[in-house]
Amino acid sequence: MEYDPNNVFAKILRREIPAKIVYEDPHALAFHDIQPQAPVHVLVIPKGAYLDWPDFAARASDAEMAGFIRAVAETARLLGVEAAGYRVLSNIGADGGQEVPHLHLHIFGGRKLGRMVPAAG
Ligand code: 5GP
Image 1 (cartoon, rainbow, N blue to C red):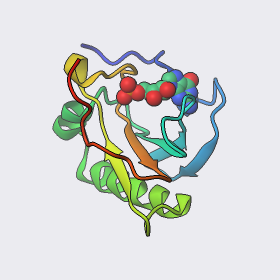
Image 2 (tube, protein in one colour):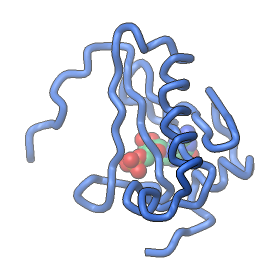
Image 3 (cartoon, helix red, strand yellow):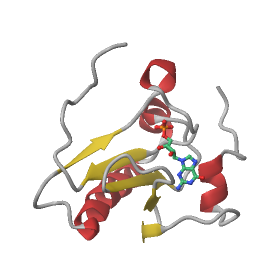
Image 4 (cartoon, protein in one colour):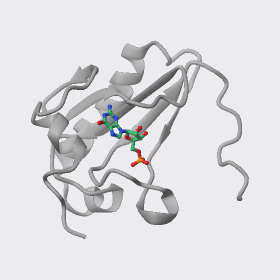
């Protein structure tokens, strides 16, 4: 699949649609999920045009990778969930349930998060 520059997160990056931004640096943007599934639910995206985790792993520079990973940790710190703990998750492809085709990591926190993967069905 080719990267679609009109996906919703690309539009957020270009400031064509609004988002509640938590953190930004040269490599990454973090903003609140529009339909939060936990008291804290924030998405962190790289600024480059990457479809998903395997695409990022294959094509991103070392600096982009380091910057993105550090941005995820810094976002969690700014959200105040570091001490209590949190979950980082990335959905990939159809079985993963990925809806938006721009790499994003979800940060969940603010309560005990329960089972790591819900039961099938
Ligand atoms: P995925 O299933 O692709 O891992 O997750 C996509 C996430 O993006 C979902 O949690 C969904 O609520 C969120 N989302 C979809 N559209 C928008 C939007 O326009 N703004 C924001 N802030 N989040 C969005």
